[in-house]
Length: 186
Image (cartoon, rainbow, N blue to C red; front, side, top):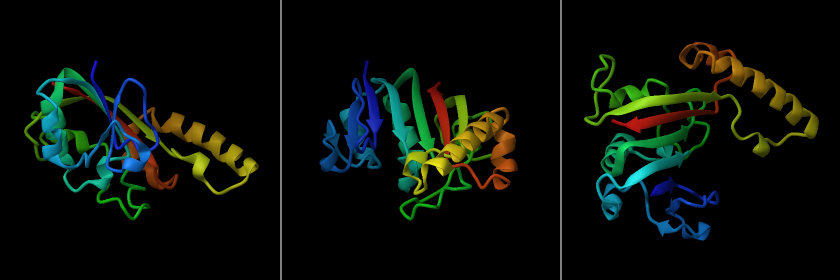
């Protein structure tokens, strides 16, 4: 089974082809995964799973990348994306865009809401995470414990109705650090 871990950084995964632009992480393949021509090394319908955690927000061409992933994915292949929710998407100066839960509509020819990209994915999973990187927060143990408890409660409630929370409730809780989308190639 061929699986790609794009923008792996120091989070390489066994059983995946780990790809990063920075050689210091020792990826299996070192290239800019936002460069469409670099994907020519992969045949049509050859990949079963693409994992791209906190990668697309650093690119200026995410729709084109999704089209290329569609080409290399096997029918029924899955893309797992983690990216900042728009409510917190620009807290990092290297982010080029924000995303919300309507973004997958660009990959559904039946949607009447947004621009169709030309390739079809079926949304098979959505998750919001209020705090995704608590281990990096500069605070003490008691504060982290309190934030961890709050995070569990907010995440539980948010994922009962992610679309409601994405558009309305997120501003009451200070935004969501991360959203996860699971898309299947149709």
